[in-house]
Length: 285
Image (cartoon, rainbow, N blue to C red; front, side, top):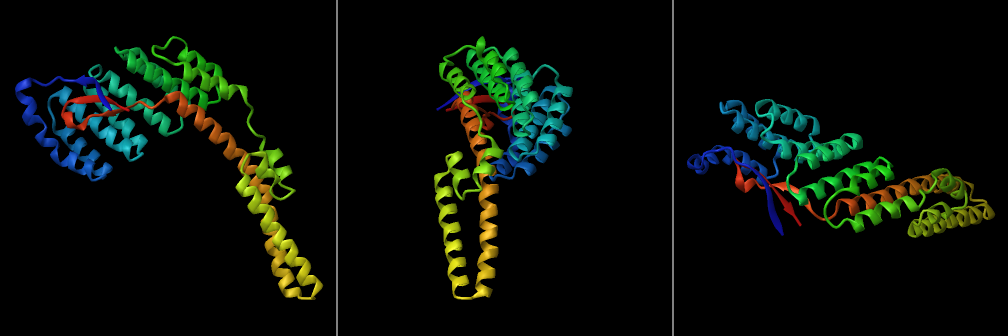
């Protein structure tokens, strides 16, 4: 389900139909997944445009294409250009883009700031809810559960599940990687500590097989085979220790990802490229 929620018009109705034609190549490149090329084409349109409002929209579209290609720095630079040409005309989409770019860069502090900026600039409750969820997710990823609760405190919408996600995350403790490593001295036990039972069984079976092979080759004086199996067992045994450490890190990341995803919810903002050269954001469900 899609719902249009924001649009920057700024063009005379008489010129709208023909104004989309210059963007045909950029849109075709976008459809082909050639994000950087599409961004360059939108940027070319912006640089050639004399009207400040229209140029700002082209720069914003270039920023979006760079962001789709995970070129966060280039995207932010295009957003700067958009704001230079039309400081107030694209307040909502620029704030959204900066927030999502910061999330992509894992700059949680900046992401929280920009989502709060989006909430302050938005004039619709569904966008304010979206922004509050984003700010809460950014703060939770920064291990700030209280900050996440504050971001949700005055937000509109039904946020009971989001608040429960924060409380559920805060109520449980992360696994300690050093404990996983120590338990890994017993093959497989470090994995069990973090709930990775398949890896635990694999570690136990393989270490057991190598130990059995070492005992058999030693009993039959096959010292060459014994040396090979001993080296392999040392590798797998070391892997059990390091695996216990890594599995604890993975468990903690999965727990955080699950809570942050629950916070953000299913709705996502996206530009409606069918409205180009207008800048239109919509919710995708």
